[in-house]
Each structure stands twice: as C-alpha cells, then as structure tokens.
Length: 137
Image (cartoon, rainbow, N blue to C red):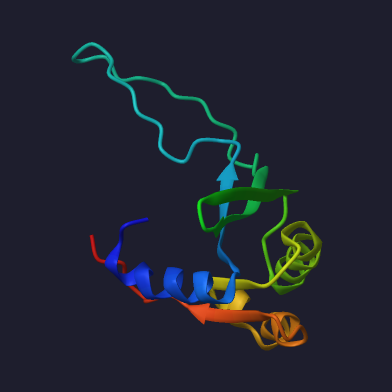
C-alpha cells in the first residue's frame, strides 16, 4: 500500500480510526471465451463448445484496511449481475462485521448510484470516497 495516491486516504482513515474499504466486482463465465490450440502444422483443430451454455458467477468483494489489520469479505451470485440492490445488501451485511466507521473507496456506477450513496450517508460514521479514474503505476 505504498501507492502515492492512497497516502492521503490512508492518513484520513487513520485520523478517523476508520476502515478503508476497497470494493469491486467481477464476473466469471463457466465456459471459455477464447479457445486456442496448437495442433501439428497442416491439421486444423476441431474445438467443440456449446454456444448456449451461458452460466456465470458474479462476485462482489471488499478488502478492508485498518492500521495494520486486514479483512477480506466476498459474496457470490450465481447467474446474476451485480447491481445497486446487491451492492446495498452487501454493504448492509458488511456494516456489523467492521464494527465501526469506514470509508468506501470506489468509482463504479452501481456504487455511486443515488440509492447506494444513501446507505453510507444514512450512517454518520460512513463516507464515500471516489477513487481516481486511472491508477498510476
């Protein structure tokens, strides 16, 4: 956590004795999108894949930092997208786990939606922080 753009947020979290929470989602298809093969030269491979098989798993997860303490929480959603309702539900379950103030650091539209923003705003000890659109490396 030595990134320069994080230092001010880490400092603010320490000053408030709050968790700094990084939230993100991802999705995983159960069938591969890219199929490659390295057959012998001149022999065209035949790769079979059922096209209508569209099962997926969506994951919402947070990495929580408090001083030197680290916590990781996640929730899986089978065959569903992560939308505002799932984000709010996840944050409601996260709230008692962290047992104290936290700063949510993210930029996804579902997280910045009015309904999502109202959840931390309804608790005086939570704050939303928008992360920079690009992260310097």
